[in-house]
Image 1: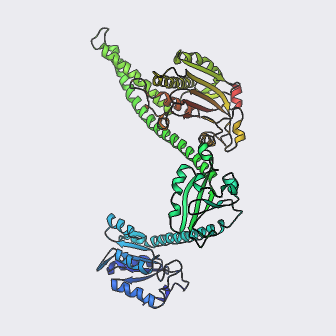
Image 2 (image 1 turned 90 degrees about the horizontal axis):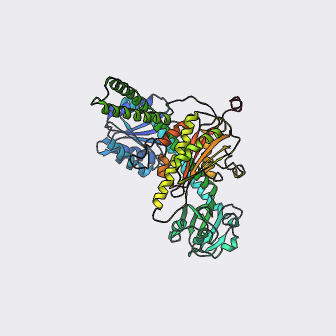
Image 3 (image 1 turned 120 degrees about the vertical axis):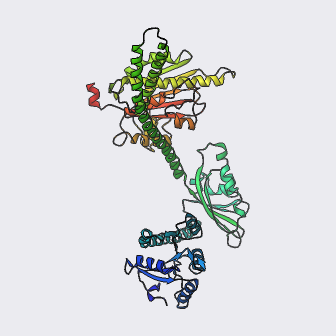
Length: 590
């Protein structure tokens, strides 16, 4: 017989467990594990399929077979061995599911086979426990965990069902709803549009009546809504689609129209106002949410790239230090060898070649250390305006006569803390990179007529990061956000997150901004992701080390700043260097 404590109506807090296992020893092991928590579990045991049937039938005959609202019935949980005489744990699972579909079941077995675990979970088991003392001791907590998960699932499903019923019942009737409510006939023509049509679509409800719904939806959305009227009665839910006034989406760009989440149902004739088959829709405006998701995706990508570069930098720094130690030994010995050879010695030429290779290797090592900030150089207050003026002649010679250099410096400029020589090298590296992009574009244009003259523009100014989502803060002079047009909210948010990671406080302090813009060949997303990686280059073998931009990035990061990139294939590139300014007191002292 079954203990009265199993009665689900008794209000007891004991957890009612049915355990099916033909091993007396294993049943005792589980019983002992549950009795550790005295008074918390009630255990009913079955050793055979017949005993299992008897227990279930007794519960039904005693009137306890009534299923609780949550579907549990006389037991809260079932434990079953996987290998039982005359049946398996899967047979027990099938038998329990027949009468008590919501009761969770845990397979308890001594095999520990992954294949058995996968098979049991695929068949609907809720968990899998191995018959080992360490696992069995944790069985009470495993049971509670499974029951909590089941209860959460039941409550979530119940809440979802109630919410959907409530939404459909009230949205389709409420004329004051902010959602756009539509009724379509079997041909897709609009029979009714709610007053919110003016806010969502931009036209009056009367202007929509008689038009086909697909006239309001963009091409991708038309594919999604096609054929929904052919479905049987029931609910309809579509991913967000873009809608607008008739003709608006065809004439405008990607930013026209509004994004809406469509939910509704197909209703058969006889249950509709028109008497015919209808599709009743509630279109919720999710444009703001969609745009925020796009902004966040841009920001996540920026952060991912920075983390990737930091990881590469740590790796490069470690390699450079180790390599530098080996190189010191090589250089020292080759110098001793060189000093010991007489002029004209047959090996002198080979030794000289080794010395040259060692110097080149040393230069590469310094670039790697610069990229990883592993080589810390002394810093001082730098007058960037004077530095640019000093470097301008060098830049013009480096660019050559075929590329025009435009320099614009907005004064007065605050001082920054950096190494003047290293910062000058950053300007040279960015200018040379811009020159190579311009020349690459001209090579592509050869044979197609004379294209636009090569141009590189260097601008330096003081910049304050704009406030997020404030168009007033980014529309004024000098308020545009890096790397391009700061009125683009996604760029502003991306800059916010990047700046906030390396500036103290709220990240709204004035910054020194250096921009190098070219009208060269531009870059695609794949190249931009790797542009600061050491040894990455798009040039031919022997025409570049791939360390110029990497070392520049390391220099700027060592100064507390960062570099942002904006580029599209065929539309040139802009590299934006952002550097924190020196505190006013220190600047005046310098």
